[in-house]
Image 1 (tube, rainbow, N blue to C red):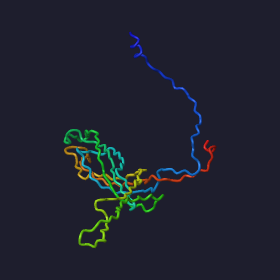
Image 2 (image 1 turned 90 degrees about the vertical axis):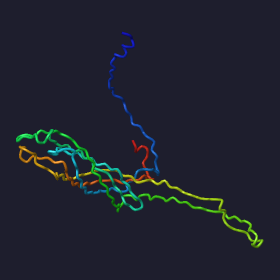
Image 3 (image 1 turned 60 degrees about the vertical axis):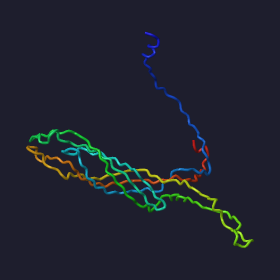
Image 4 (image 1 turned 120 degrees about the horizontal axis):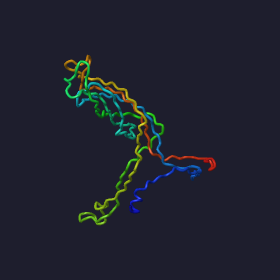
Length: 251
């Protein structure tokens, strides 16, 4: 075996050793410092009422489990109206038992079924007004555009007094002053969610032939849901931070 092949066959082992650590004193600016940080404008609790109809792709014997996840797709504070627009959906993964093959192949003492899952999105949207701020938002500054002209004098054609002149602006020139402001857009964080739901089959039928008593199947389910959301609204702002501590106090 060549030396190259021997190197490829080697097994590398390592040992975890303990290393020493020492306190590090970072540079800290003392006194009054202006910093740009996220400022909490408001923290809101929203309650939404949802009603949806879910159609399954196959017969369902019973629901085994439902896992839910709230997802926001839009959370926009419209200044200066103080209106907060919220949009999103509830992702539902439904695990259910479905009869194997033909539902007619059931007996009086047993039912064969497979465990399947079905994922659907239940959309929601609402608008609410922020009536009380923790910190006031920085209102957007409006862009402006102004035109200005210069006075020009021109000679008048025949028919006017010789000493008179045409005083006006020059139509061949265009002058403008414009200002644009790049405002900080408020944004949101989803803090928590709570769901209370009621799911009920609306087209349940008994299993045919000699199925066990009370057994049936359905393909359509109506859902009523109360969704509670806790949302934090923030905005990047310049904040003056005052510090009177000495460097030794940071040890």
